[in-house]
Length: 193
Image (cartoon, rainbow, N blue to C red; front, top):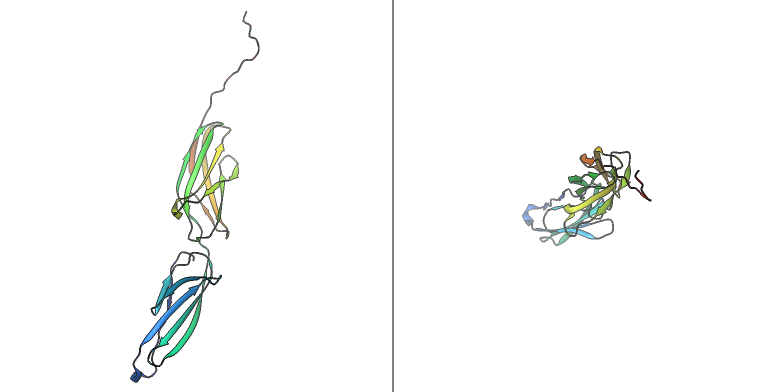
């Protein structure tokens, strides 16, 4: 899963112990676009893929005693991780005034894009606004504004969907909408007798 550590292990043995052993290891891991995403010079390499897809690990082992070079490859198939939501918040208001909800989120998929859908608890489901934070992926937000027609207690949920189709739901957010007293406007000439 993207964002989880993957470890490649290797071993090298000299078939004739009289030669001694002195091996050099070089790992190169590339993503599906051929970009190098990790390197290492030990017999083991651990890296965390930041996107789902196929990764190719190429190991080159050099036997410094015999001057022979050996190459092997391995593939890692990395699946998508769903976004993680936290820090739900909501601010109620009066009928006909804006109520606001929001949630912070992060995603191990560095290049994932997201959409938000908000169920306002009054039969309305609308798209939310997704905002990416500069420099801190844990401060990305999904939020929305809604105008309730009637006073009452409402339970709101936010669904965040990444571009690979993984969905995550917020904890329920309680919103209280207060009653707005009716107002009367008189127009035209008023006569009192």
